[in-house]
Each structure stands twice: as structure tokens, then as C-alpha cells.
Length: 168
Image (cartoon, helix red, strand yellow):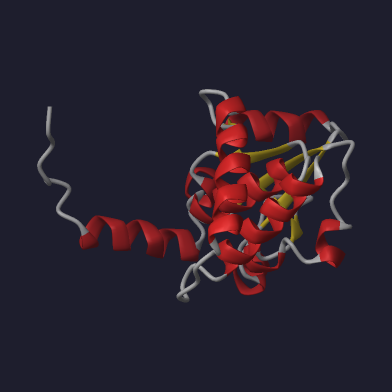
């Protein structure tokens, strides 16, 4: 990865971690991030590096040792129930140097969260850093309905009517 790409990834990591705060890039930083993002998105396959829960379960059941499962949910959610063999690195902490050091560069990194939203953010960052990363499609909602996931499903079901207009 070029120095410019590394700088852009650093800027991207900072901007993603500050997403809830007001944060603006300088024009030069924005230009670098746009360049790296365009390169990254240009090589992304149609499946966007997502794996079905069934495929992950098959790898677990086979005893394969060529991957590491990373649960990017909170420690509380992890302790409430997680996929066997998974390690916990909350998504907000994934880019810390000590946490990146826990991730092997010679194995697949399979990420998951409750719904797939947070793990997809991490997936993009890890891909840009050169890791062979994948996300589990639909997260824990697709694996097993643990309490946090059941609450998420209920919030979705009761929080939207699901009948918003579409344009054709």
C-alpha cells in the first residue's frame, strides 16, 4: 500500500470514528480519501465480501484453521452469546494498533455484529489495510436470535411501516 493510501486510510478511520461528531477533511485530505475510496470501490466484487452464515458454519464444523472470527459488538453483547471460537474487538476499537496486531495477515478475517452494519464499516477499513476480510451477511440476526438481536428485530418491525413509496 502506498504512503498516500496509508494516509487516506488513516484519515478514513478517523472520519468513521468521528461520524457522530462534526468533522471535515481539508481539501487535500478529501482528495486523497476520494482517490483511495475510488480505487477500493472499483475492485469490490458484486458480493461485497459478504459470506452467508451457512458458509461460516460449514467452516466451523469442518475444523478449518484458515480463518479468525471477530465479533465487533460490545463486550456486553459478546458475553451474552457469540459464535464459537470468535474473539471480541468492538468496532470502535478495531483500528487501534494493539487490536490490529491480534489479526493475522495470513488468514481470512470474518467479521460480524448484530445486523451487519457495524461489521461492514470495519470490513472496509480492514480491506483497505490489506487484510483478507469478510463480513457475515445480516450478522447475528441471521445466526441465532440472541436477546440483543431479538430486540433489534422487534425495533425494526415496530419502527417502520415498510410501505414507503418506490420510484420506477
